Length: 591
Image 1 (cartoon, rainbow, N blue to C red):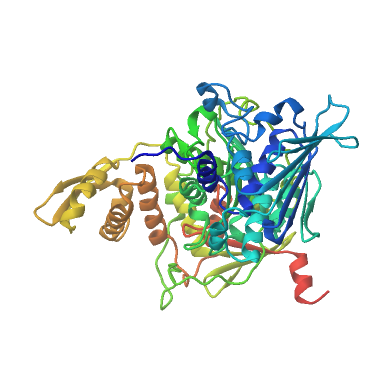
Image 2: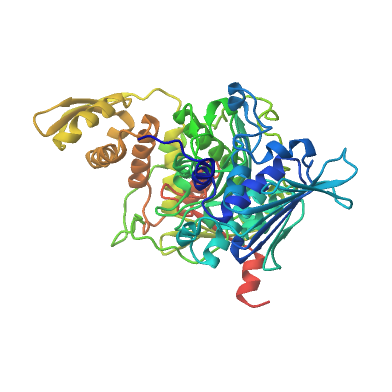
């Protein structure tokens, strides 16, 4: 027999989707305060929100006439018709939060609008309404005894410390993307957060407790209908654990696609196994995403995942292109990584390297054109930019590399490191890492079409049968390659890009590329595969640690490095150069 559920059971089931824990209530109510235009929000909790949650704001308040519908399911002022879902500019829109909260707790409301002379108290459980003579414009919601009527739900909560940490995280996330709003947050009457309205940099440092704020790079970039605002960390402050704080239209989201795009935006500037710091708020036209796929709106769907991925990757790359080279690197503790190829030979090498071969192919980098568009329609609350100019902190690396040295001769230590004084202190370069990056960028910036070179002796390579078709398909699409099926478990390479044929161990490079295709071939762009191939060539072709360079070779290398876009990091993300400035020397001698 099929029965219709009673209203109270329906409400409690719905509440289970929205009110997972005390932090869920804090999130919903603080977002309501933001939608009401609040510039000051206070949050107080007792016993991690189980005993009491108070949210007080100075927003527009709620009209007395709306009390009757305020706590009903699907009652909202945010949308009226289905088309409104495609143009959302508010944090909330479903009209489920207040009814869900009321279903599992005891709620009281005090509110006043600008047009009202007095405020009003409202109890949705008893429908009691009282006049409050002395009330400020805004709304105060008090939530008591959470899950008092569904005690089984309490069994699934964690300790008070854990639940409090979830509340704190929610408030930090919301405060991070709303620096124009002041937040005060207390637990057991103890103040945990107190931030005034400020610029974005100040808010980022205060909320995320960034230790190396001088290494933060401002993200303020736009492409087509996408805009990104926030901060990313210079590769020098990358860590072995992810440090992503991602927002879509000011909503904190869990979005692996964006994480991967940020990681690839850094590309060769990160060491293997390291992740960048990234706080990025991405603004996307509402019609190009769906925020209605998760009850707590922590996940979104895009109409075009590929476009979003490539655009975010570009926006991160554009920021690094503009700013990363302008921050000078100082020594830090060594980050050992067994996966890195340091290219250190067992004995000194006598190979002669021709720098002119690569210098002839240097091309000036042309930045992609960025379309202009107005994002006010996507972001109802604009994030203030930081009043801080990182370009004035320390000299540009290009200036350091291009400046004349104080002493004409360069020191060559361990036949690996180039050391020389300049007006800012001592510059140290890793010859292999610098040359590797010089070669990579020169190869990547060649404007000529890739020429194909037929092999006098075609190369047969063993490939698992299950991977053979995708390997042939991808290789055939890479410019310069000519490849055929060659039996049950082999493919044959008949031609390769001309630049590859000029290198030693070209077969080894091809095998490395095939391994990458088999690992990620179906998810990688062809352009990414080409870059991976060029990385391998650059690494293997660069001068090695232990090679004794002449003064003229050192000068040629420094001049070439000054022309690169990202010369401070090699293909593996390791630093290529370090500047020892006056502060560093004084710290060593405790001055």
